[in-house]
Length: 274
Image (cartoon, rainbow, N blue to C red):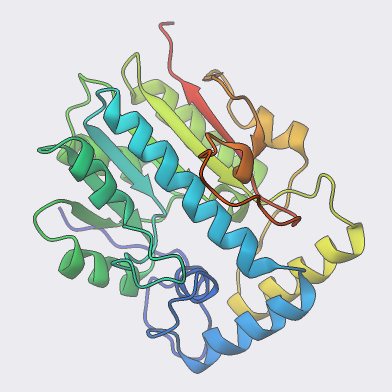
């Protein structure tokens, strides 16, 4: 399947930072970052307190969630806006989500979708043999669902991961995507979301971070309140532990106490019968 994407990073432009590369840099894997990405990261560090910590806690929470879901039997995953695989080269040496699922559930099916051509190119090389990849803009739900239908069996439950991506969509775009997923995913499927929040964060920091991000990435970002992030679930039913900070999502008892930071919010929601 070949798709044309118009989203962030859909064509290679070294003069503009992309969410995928700056996210990787903030996780501590800057090797593929370009000058524009490094400048964006420097500005974000000035604008948002402990932004590296926030991003790394987000990545760890997703690893915990995927490991759990694979361990209880799920064997189909769609990572929408999944970004660039890092092969454990980030500061915390985290495995890629596809590798986590494959370790727990050999033979599982994984689909990585992103609009960024550099993320997809890396994904095809690094995840060869355990994942399929498609370059698709999440603002086009029809193409997203087509990719899911091509690579996964939509007669069986699917885990859809939306890690740190819905905040790049307008309310209307996010609702359209979630509605489309509800319509096509089978009963028992789960959607896993992490999202930047304005709840509990100083308004001045939110404004600084938003302005810095948009100026460097040529993309809008929409920090949302806890209530708004909860509402994105739509008809999906949010499961335990509810809507929580990423550091509080299935925390491991042997982990060090998390640092205070404006963490992303996170929820996991199930597609129940109509």
